[in-house]
Length: 500
Image 1 (spheres, rainbow, N blue to C red):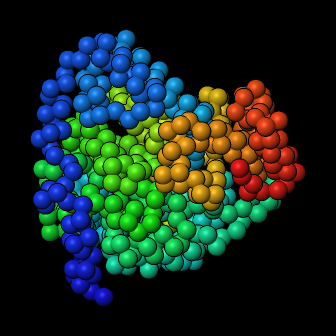
Image 2 (cartoon, helix red, strand yellow):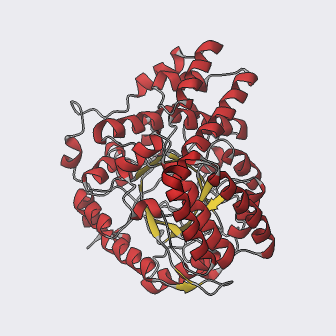
């Protein structure tokens, strides 16, 4: 099929119409801007009441979020930051989930002004991975120790739904012996970052056994969206992208993920956009986003905007927006990526983040070819933290955080409204803790360097002590704790992929 013919059939406006109100979508720029303007001067009492509401694991309103965004008092910011970490521990315990991205293609029909994949970027070396290359990339990712992968595709007929389905199958087919123990390992869950799709294609995606489907709006500000996404491109259709996750829910994909690219417009407005998007999904489907991502603009080949945008977010404001999002949306996962430098990433994790990537390579075929990190000719943007998974796992252990490679929820029905309900009642985090320890035990035996393993052993000993002393795990004569310890001993002896 010719590219122009493929573009013509890529969007079906009628699939959005059922969700619109008199042709309007749920993002009202004027209302969000008004919320920012009228909530500039909240009292300390108001701010503390909002913090207390969030600590009770209730989502905040647009106005409440706007009040937090305007806080200037350093003392109140300390309280917000402290609450952000407290909420994360209450909902998710003290674990950090790891994943690796795999970029499968950089052919793209769009021309987004901030992106290295943009169609007019003549510096970009275009490529679509073959299935054998996908297998080799997967082998490299597995050799690093990952169990969870997010696959990323350019929007182009050569990376259409049929190609995606085949690449997902290829990833799931790979088995690899771990370098330390020799135990057989594989990718246990594939998540997807791809362009908006029609419902029939989303159903095909669901059938492959994916975990989360991720579509970022990039910017919720309509004027800015039109400026950075040329109107004659597929991505130029604001509403088609905005309702991508509605259509995914309709297709049966109940774990969806949102995000904004901070630096395209005012970061405060984008935070309100994310809160509005989460509320809309909750209202329509009874379940909000599984995760929220907070990428910042970093330099991209062929993009002046990526370095010159007047809305670039400094580190202090970045920390503020992450903390406010943690309070505004207390139960979705919060993802910080390798776009960030190690120092700021470490600080951001302490503001309530639950997931991050490691040993990240974003060039097409970069895991197997070991390209230099500074090469930009096949990358969508630049990354700030290219460190190995082992070094970051060791850093997390030094911080007292368990590194988790758990995919249990996807495979035992804790998805969609089930997992959201458990998160809201602070129950899912209990299972997260158990499965985090089990998968961390696997990692230490199969992949860890001696230094990381020594630190990890001490951390696991402490975690098991906490589990033993918590009433939740000792109910019914310690049934759950005993099951956990039985599984733990099995893993120590060589069994793999056991979860609760």
